[in-house]
Image 1 (cartoon, rainbow, N blue to C red):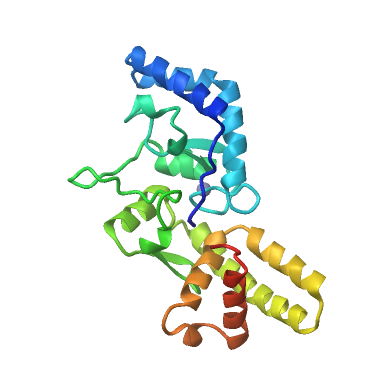
Image 2 (cartoon, protein in one colour; image 1 turned 90 degrees about the vertical axis):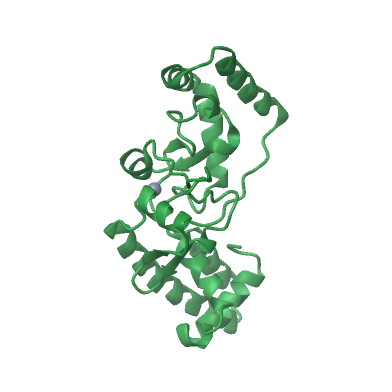
Length: 240
Ligand SMILES: [Zn+2]
Protein backbone atom coordinates (compact mmCIF):
# COMPACT_ATOMS: atom_id res chain seq x y z
CA UNK A 1 0.00 0.00 0.00
CA UNK A 2 1.32 3.46 -0.92
CA UNK A 3 -0.10 6.97 -0.48
CA UNK A 4 -2.52 7.91 -3.26
CA UNK A 5 -3.65 11.33 -4.36
CA UNK A 6 -7.41 11.49 -4.75
CA UNK A 7 -8.24 13.77 -7.70
CA UNK A 8 -10.81 16.50 -7.34
CA UNK A 9 -13.97 15.60 -9.19
CA UNK A 10 -15.97 17.97 -11.37
CA UNK A 11 -18.87 19.88 -9.87
CA UNK A 12 -21.24 18.14 -12.28
CA UNK A 13 -20.12 14.70 -11.13
CA UNK A 14 -20.16 15.75 -7.48
CA UNK A 15 -23.76 16.86 -7.99
CA UNK A 16 -24.70 13.49 -9.46
CA UNK A 17 -23.24 11.74 -6.41
CA UNK A 18 -24.91 14.16 -4.01
CA UNK A 19 -28.30 13.61 -5.67
CA UNK A 20 -27.94 9.87 -5.10
CA UNK A 21 -26.87 10.36 -1.48
CA UNK A 22 -29.80 12.73 -0.83
CA UNK A 23 -32.25 10.28 -2.29
CA UNK A 24 -30.88 7.49 -0.06
CA UNK A 25 -31.15 9.78 2.99
CA UNK A 26 -34.72 10.82 2.15
CA UNK A 27 -35.72 7.18 1.91
CA UNK A 28 -33.78 6.33 5.09
CA UNK A 29 -32.25 3.59 2.96
CA UNK A 30 -31.13 0.41 4.65
CA UNK A 31 -28.28 -1.80 3.42
CA UNK A 32 -30.48 -3.66 0.94
CA UNK A 33 -31.88 -0.48 -0.61
CA UNK A 34 -28.44 1.19 -0.80
CA UNK A 35 -26.96 -1.90 -2.46
CA UNK A 36 -29.77 -1.99 -5.02
CA UNK A 37 -29.36 1.71 -5.79
CA UNK A 38 -25.60 1.26 -6.13
CA UNK A 39 -26.02 -1.73 -8.43
CA UNK A 40 -28.38 0.09 -10.78
CA UNK A 41 -26.25 3.27 -10.95
CA UNK A 42 -24.27 1.92 -13.91
CA UNK A 43 -23.04 5.17 -15.43
CA UNK A 44 -21.96 6.55 -12.06
CA UNK A 45 -20.04 3.35 -11.35
CA UNK A 46 -18.44 3.47 -14.79
CA UNK A 47 -17.35 7.10 -14.29
CA UNK A 48 -16.08 6.37 -10.78
CA UNK A 49 -14.03 3.49 -12.08
CA UNK A 50 -12.43 5.72 -14.66
CA UNK A 51 -11.49 8.29 -12.01
CA UNK A 52 -10.14 5.62 -9.69
CA UNK A 53 -8.13 4.05 -12.51
CA UNK A 54 -6.32 7.37 -12.94
CA UNK A 55 -5.64 7.52 -9.22
CA UNK A 56 -4.26 3.96 -8.95
CA UNK A 57 -0.58 3.14 -9.07
CA UNK A 58 1.01 1.60 -12.17
CA UNK A 59 -1.38 0.07 -14.66
CA UNK A 60 -4.57 0.26 -12.58
CA UNK A 61 -3.25 -1.84 -9.72
CA UNK A 62 -5.37 -2.70 -6.70
CA UNK A 63 -5.05 0.11 -4.16
CA UNK A 64 -4.62 -2.33 -1.29
CA UNK A 65 -2.32 -5.18 -2.40
CA UNK A 66 -0.69 -3.31 -5.33
CA UNK A 67 -0.40 -6.58 -7.23
CA UNK A 68 -3.53 -7.50 -9.18
CA UNK A 69 -5.66 -5.43 -11.54
CA UNK A 70 -8.10 -3.16 -9.71
CA UNK A 71 -11.47 -4.41 -10.94
CA UNK A 72 -13.95 -3.61 -8.16
CA UNK A 73 -15.01 -0.38 -6.52
CA UNK A 74 -14.63 -0.97 -2.80
CA UNK A 75 -16.58 1.02 -0.24
CA UNK A 76 -13.96 1.76 2.39
CA UNK A 77 -16.71 2.11 4.96
CA UNK A 78 -18.93 -0.78 3.87
CA UNK A 79 -22.49 -0.17 2.71
CA UNK A 80 -23.54 -2.73 5.34
CA UNK A 81 -22.29 -0.37 8.05
CA UNK A 82 -23.19 2.95 6.49
CA UNK A 83 -25.74 2.68 3.65
CA UNK A 84 -25.79 6.47 3.20
CA UNK A 85 -22.08 6.61 2.29
CA UNK A 86 -22.51 4.45 -0.83
CA UNK A 87 -22.08 7.45 -3.16
CA UNK A 88 -19.47 9.45 -1.22
CA UNK A 89 -16.40 9.95 -3.41
CA UNK A 90 -13.91 9.78 -0.53
CA UNK A 91 -15.33 6.35 0.36
CA UNK A 92 -14.37 4.73 -2.94
CA UNK A 93 -11.24 2.74 -3.74
CA UNK A 94 -10.29 0.42 -6.56
CA UNK A 95 -9.52 -3.10 -5.37
CA UNK A 96 -8.87 -6.50 -6.90
CA UNK A 97 -11.61 -9.03 -6.37
CA UNK A 98 -9.46 -10.99 -3.92
CA UNK A 99 -8.84 -8.02 -1.60
CA UNK A 100 -12.43 -6.83 -1.94
CA UNK A 101 -14.52 -9.98 -1.92
CA UNK A 102 -12.33 -12.61 -0.27
CA UNK A 103 -10.62 -10.51 2.35
CA UNK A 104 -12.10 -7.14 3.32
CA UNK A 105 -15.76 -7.77 2.57
CA UNK A 106 -17.79 -5.85 5.20
CA UNK A 107 -15.01 -5.43 7.72
CA UNK A 108 -14.43 -1.99 9.18
CA UNK A 109 -12.71 -2.37 12.54
CA UNK A 110 -12.74 0.57 14.93
CA UNK A 111 -10.97 1.34 18.21
CA UNK A 112 -13.02 1.61 21.43
CA UNK A 113 -13.08 5.39 20.85
CA UNK A 114 -14.57 4.89 17.38
CA UNK A 115 -11.49 5.61 15.29
CA UNK A 116 -11.28 3.53 12.11
CA UNK A 117 -8.44 1.03 12.31
CA UNK A 118 -7.79 0.78 8.59
CA UNK A 119 -5.19 2.90 6.80
CA UNK A 120 -6.85 5.18 4.25
CA UNK A 121 -4.07 5.61 1.65
CA UNK A 122 -5.71 8.76 0.28
CA UNK A 123 -5.52 10.47 3.67
CA UNK A 124 -2.44 9.10 5.40
CA UNK A 125 0.92 7.53 4.67
CA UNK A 126 0.66 3.74 5.07
CA UNK A 127 4.37 3.73 5.91
CA UNK A 128 3.55 5.37 9.26
CA UNK A 129 1.63 2.24 10.21
CA UNK A 130 3.19 -0.59 8.24
CA UNK A 131 6.82 -1.43 7.57
CA UNK A 132 8.09 -3.72 4.86
CA UNK A 133 10.94 -6.16 5.28
CA UNK A 134 12.38 -5.89 1.78
CA UNK A 135 14.22 -9.22 1.43
CA UNK A 136 11.30 -11.29 2.77
CA UNK A 137 8.45 -9.16 1.43
CA UNK A 138 6.74 -9.40 4.82
CA UNK A 139 4.75 -6.54 6.27
CA UNK A 140 5.01 -5.65 9.93
CA UNK A 141 2.44 -3.52 11.71
CA UNK A 142 3.84 -0.57 13.65
CA UNK A 143 0.50 0.48 15.14
CA UNK A 144 -2.85 -1.11 15.91
CA UNK A 145 -4.08 0.43 12.68
CA UNK A 146 -1.20 -1.14 10.77
CA UNK A 147 -1.88 -4.57 12.26
CA UNK A 148 -5.57 -4.37 11.45
CA UNK A 149 -4.85 -3.16 7.92
CA UNK A 150 -2.57 -6.14 7.29
CA UNK A 151 -5.17 -8.52 8.71
CA UNK A 152 -8.28 -7.11 7.02
CA UNK A 153 -6.74 -6.75 3.54
CA UNK A 154 -4.84 -10.03 3.85
CA UNK A 155 -1.52 -8.33 3.09
CA UNK A 156 0.42 -11.28 4.52
CA UNK A 157 -0.79 -13.63 1.79
CA UNK A 158 2.14 -15.86 0.77
CA UNK A 159 1.78 -14.89 -2.90
CA UNK A 160 2.02 -11.21 -1.99
CA UNK A 161 5.07 -11.72 0.24
CA UNK A 162 6.82 -13.68 -2.48
CA UNK A 163 5.81 -11.09 -5.08
CA UNK A 164 7.24 -8.26 -2.97
CA UNK A 165 10.49 -10.14 -2.35
CA UNK A 166 10.91 -10.65 -6.11
CA UNK A 167 9.92 -7.04 -6.80
CA UNK A 168 12.74 -5.96 -4.47
CA UNK A 169 15.27 -7.92 -6.54
CA UNK A 170 13.84 -6.36 -9.74
CA UNK A 171 13.91 -2.83 -8.31
CA UNK A 172 17.54 -3.17 -7.20
CA UNK A 173 18.53 -4.51 -10.59
CA UNK A 174 16.67 -1.79 -12.47
CA UNK A 175 18.15 0.96 -10.30
CA UNK A 176 21.64 -0.33 -11.08
CA UNK A 177 20.75 -0.46 -14.76
CA UNK A 178 19.31 3.05 -14.65
CA UNK A 179 22.48 4.32 -13.01
CA UNK A 180 24.64 2.59 -15.66
CA UNK A 181 22.57 4.12 -18.48
CA UNK A 182 22.90 7.58 -16.94
CA UNK A 183 26.65 7.06 -16.45
CA UNK A 184 26.97 6.03 -20.11
CA UNK A 185 25.11 9.10 -21.31
CA UNK A 186 22.21 7.00 -22.62
CA UNK A 187 19.42 9.29 -21.51
CA UNK A 188 16.62 7.62 -23.48
CA UNK A 189 17.47 4.17 -22.16
CA UNK A 190 17.70 5.54 -18.63
CA UNK A 191 14.29 7.15 -18.99
CA UNK A 192 12.77 3.89 -20.27
CA UNK A 193 14.17 1.97 -17.29
CA UNK A 194 12.86 4.58 -14.86
CA UNK A 195 9.39 4.50 -16.40
CA UNK A 196 9.28 0.69 -16.25
CA UNK A 197 10.46 0.83 -12.65
CA UNK A 198 7.78 3.22 -11.50
CA UNK A 199 4.80 1.52 -13.16
CA UNK A 200 5.48 -2.07 -12.20
CA UNK A 201 3.22 -3.91 -9.74
CA UNK A 202 4.09 -3.85 -6.03
CA UNK A 203 4.74 -0.09 -6.05
CA UNK A 204 4.94 -0.42 -2.26
CA UNK A 205 8.36 -2.05 -2.62
CA UNK A 206 9.95 0.90 -4.43
CA UNK A 207 8.14 3.27 -2.07
CA UNK A 208 9.59 1.46 0.97
CA UNK A 209 13.06 1.48 -0.63
CA UNK A 210 12.88 5.25 -1.13
CA UNK A 211 11.71 5.77 2.46
CA UNK A 212 14.51 3.56 3.78
CA UNK A 213 17.09 5.35 1.64
CA UNK A 214 16.67 8.40 3.84
CA UNK A 215 16.60 6.54 7.15
CA UNK A 216 19.62 6.08 9.42
CA UNK A 217 21.54 2.97 8.40
CA UNK A 218 20.55 3.19 4.73
CA UNK A 219 24.16 2.62 3.71
CA UNK A 220 24.12 -0.76 5.41
CA UNK A 221 20.97 -1.83 3.54
CA UNK A 222 21.69 -0.72 -0.02
CA UNK A 223 24.66 -0.87 -2.36
CA UNK A 224 26.05 2.69 -2.85
CA UNK A 225 24.94 2.72 -6.50
CA UNK A 226 21.40 1.67 -5.55
CA UNK A 227 21.30 4.17 -2.70
CA UNK A 228 22.36 7.06 -4.95
CA UNK A 229 19.84 6.00 -7.59
CA UNK A 230 17.02 5.82 -5.03
CA UNK A 231 17.78 9.33 -3.84
CA UNK A 232 17.74 10.62 -7.41
CA UNK A 233 14.43 8.89 -8.08
CA UNK A 234 12.99 10.60 -5.03
CA UNK A 235 14.43 13.99 -5.95
CA UNK A 236 13.03 13.66 -9.46
CA UNK A 237 9.61 13.47 -7.87
CA UNK A 238 8.87 9.84 -8.73
CA UNK A 239 6.88 7.78 -6.27
CA UNK A 240 6.65 10.39 -3.51
ZN1 LIG B 1 -5.74 -6.48 -4.11
